[in-house]
Length: 258
Image 1 (cartoon, rainbow, N blue to C red):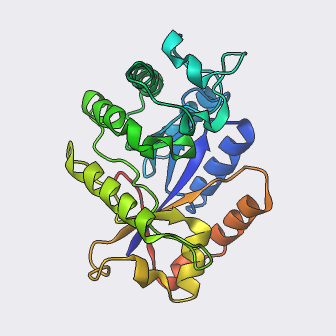
Image 2 (cartoon, rainbow, N blue to C red):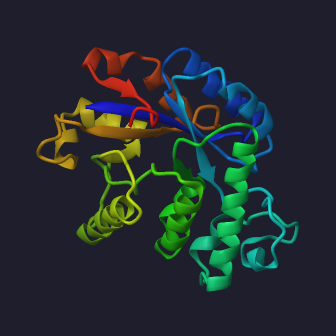
């Protein structure tokens, strides 16, 4: 088994940028995804070239900060100051016009990264909006137009204290299957948070979430958020820096090698 340790939110603030790049320099983070409309995106982009062995993807955004495009069809997602208004995208009807506006906005976000010379290694998203079923056609159109063949799957590994319905797991399995096979896309075997993975490995419970042949060609993406405020994020960093992955003999990789 190998793990990709992906730091979300690169470009969201100078503190987050500093924390992510520090962990990359120390070999604890192997990948990161950039918020193209984040307040600290340019300083983040300027440092990516120093980390050739790490992967850098796009963290598609439709929930925070001002969009890069000026499109009236984005209005249902915006507040009175013209910024994305949180998770409203999950509570409103996603019309054809809105899908078109999101496609153009996400295209602009990728274009901003490529304008700096960065070729995104993969796609994921802020607050996992790319996994909203109604936006699946938008995601696939984006992949095709931008020629990005690697995407984060919908979460399919949960901690021991989580109560997850069979119906939800079936829906996620179906979404991930479609992701991999419609416009052929390369993904990890599994995706979860670092702390949930740590808990499962420590308790010997990780195998129940992996395929029967999990010892062969299995890659798990672990999501972390260095630099964010809160005890959970401090705990992530503590676990990252503890050396437990090396002690368990778990290899680290990135989306470049996937």
